[in-house]
Image 1 (cartoon, one colour):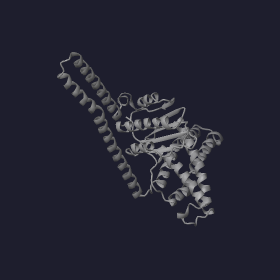
Image 2 (tube, rainbow, N blue to C red; image 1 turned 45 degrees about the vertical axis):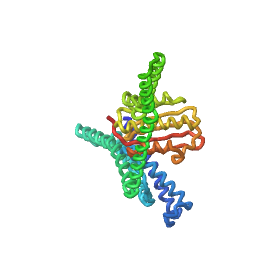
Image 3 (cartoon, rainbow, N blue to C red; image 1 turned 90 degrees about the horizontal axis):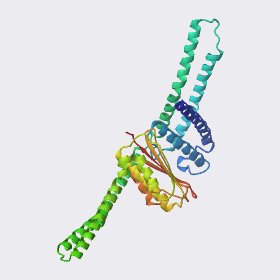
Image 4 (tube, rainbow, N blue to C red; image 1 turned 135 degrees about the horizontal axis):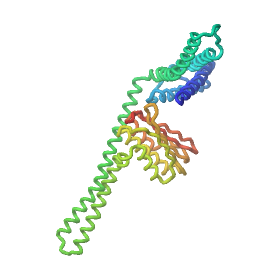
Length: 372
């Protein structure tokens, strides 16, 4: 029942966007469709085409939620969105009209059709017709919903320029390689300046202790060597925790995010609904992205509270981290957001930033993956 209601709601929403597409389609020629598309920045055509682009982007996100995956990036020609506008203006309201006709037929057969002769055969025929129409209505809702999603994806994403996609993947892989090299250098530096230095100091203290004849001096050096060994062990544990936290291996992504939220210096509302576990590399990437987002919010936003939502729908893991701080976060304005983007890009993930001046700020991370 819940799926049926959701399907009807989706078809109703598509009917509304279809009517909006029809209205925009009428506005395009009225605003000067003969103006070259290269000059779309000029009003009023630029304003109308910007509305077309926003409506098409909304439809792509909706189709991604229905079919799984996420919106692909890259250049999309304006003519393709205009072609979708013409098709969606008809196909958007059409399923609602078809369902209304089916329901009208069902109501007519069930309540109004009176056979001229009452018999078992007529009663059976009317009952069979009623059941058939009702089954057709129930089956049509998910079919119409999926069909519209596939049509939107085919029209809006099917013509993405191959070169643009290749450039995107090349940049993504280059960013991943750079991030991997930086992480290797960080681990090397932490080992060299931390645990290795302390272990060398332990060796020196033990060497001096071996040549000492003073019992008090010998005990002091052994105590210092023991303390340095403990510090080196702590450094190694912190280093391993930074590579793959034990809480992530023990409690999964939801438990690790909850632990990260508890350690945050400000209150964090946690809403996690994850019925399974992603693959370990995806799990690690999403966890560190969430931890980085919380750290950035605590350090720079001036927020009094934050929130985290985690869902897995349509084959996409969606994580939202928000705060009620001052806002104004720009993806190109800091290494924290760029680092999250680079981390997610390794798995064909995407990051959307909503941060108007004055707040609130929301970072939405989407990674296509399956759960085990």
